[in-house]
Image 1 (cartoon, one colour):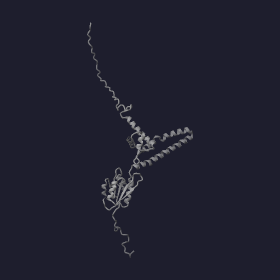
Image 2 (tube, helix red, strand yellow; image 1 turned 90 degrees about the horizontal axis):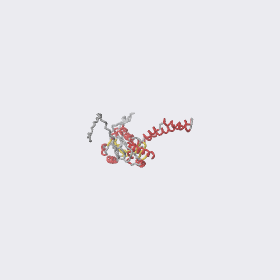
Image 3 (spheres, helix red, strand yellow; image 1 turned 60 degrees about the horizontal axis):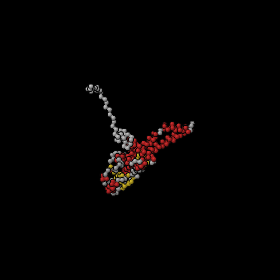
Image 4 (cartoon, helix red, strand yellow; image 1 turned 90 degrees about the vertical axis):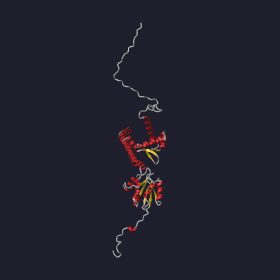
Length: 313
């Protein structure tokens, strides 16, 4: 006997509270988001692997610079580190901007900056060195002998640090400043001498040159005022000095050949002089045009007693 059983439909009560939709983060195999190219170590959002590689290269550059004696070119450092010269130059320039390295324009070489010496002095301060020195001294020389040895060692270290800091601040920093700064004070000394010899401040001119002097600094060093504004940039503007009979003085850069040629053309009787600076690479030129005006002796004051007759005393 066949019994027809109808399927029973059971209604399930729906949950009125919706379940949270849970998602899983996408992972792309072989993508730069999850794996470094050619490396199995994952990268985070900030790209820590690339940053750590750059930092490691920068540290290696400083290490090789120390092995080369603290002064080397970008090519030498790049060859020692094993990177390209443009890459080494970018790293070294960044270290120069942070003060860790310095760059000498004359020799095109890099050296350690003052910040490295400052951090080196903070690495082992005296309060940390003293317990270490005393512990090691007492270990080898018990009693008063160890204390005397510790005091002597501390005195040597403090004296060495003081000598190093003195040399870095008053010698190394001074040399680095002189190489990077201009020398308006030396030019002002020369201008003052010419003005004392009869040249009018209105007849002193500065021929500008790229990345050279600031006319305001020259005015302050020469005349103690910012009112002097006789500075030109184009050689053709040298004609503004005029052709009057008064003596004239021109300050010219040693590499400004167009300005020298223009001055020779305008004032053939001028005298070109080279002024050597104590700092290498800071020499400058002056072009002096002697005056053609003559002084009238009749304008001199009458000597005392000259108006008296010869017979009277």
